[in-house]
Length: 402
Image 1 (cartoon, rainbow, N blue to C red):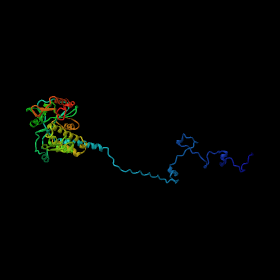
Image 2: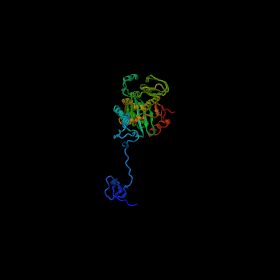
Image 3: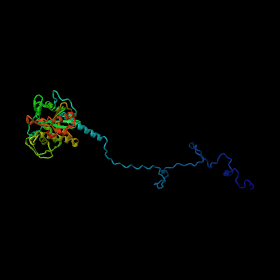
Image 4: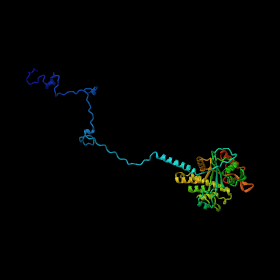
């Protein structure tokens, strides 16, 4: 095509509007030309021609999120939904139960310690030669006619006055050890050597020489070393039984004994303190007299032990207080006994025990008196001394051969 002359209406070379066609000779771009934005400092590694992703706008700013209805944003952050209020419920603090158990323990220990101060202590250690110490522990339990702790109403019911405890109807050796627990009664009419008195009934040792002479007589008769002495009066039986709310006895026949103020029928029954005492003292109803009586005495003592094991004894503070008060008011112990020893004695009174009467025979000199059976009694004595199992042949309720 022939060159057209300039000024003929064709765009001239160098005209700014047509630089795209002819190329620009100028270094300064026109003010309305599209310009490249220089890379930022953080975009050093970015490629200049890379497509950049814009940051995502907040849903509130976009105004088109779900639930907004497409309305434009208001510029305010919506308030958080209120939390549901929880109903207040009382909670048991973790420290309450241990505190309660601690208070109960203090009460169970503190009550006996408090009443310990009211218990009479007596000198029961005999003088002279004694059997050496033996395995296990041997308690001598003595039931006296001590009545100075009875109320006027109780004295009227028993028809007795104030007495200082000069006689004993109950003599029991309670042994505890690895061989088990054995409760052996010694009939009060047993003839034996009483130190300083020659041959006499064993209960005379108590009336003439008190606890020390009785302990010496029992040790000389049996060879058993007595570790502790516990004396119970009338009041201890009555008040302790009543504090327990009664005990169960099981007479094998109807018993009517005016001298003991006893009138009960055959069979197991709950009785109060006065009836329990009369039951343990009666000796004019059954054929074996004192031999049957000592068996009933052990029955009442064992019944008290069963009641003591009841959980109600420990969880009822009033009952627990009354039992300790009743026992401490009519009991005497040896001077060497401490509260821990008394606690062991109380535990020894509970639970299963072998119950025996010392093997005996009618005395050759007096059929109304008894003597230890020379053939069977040593086996029972030796088992207690050696803390071994008591042979059944030597352990009978009345002490007579089966």
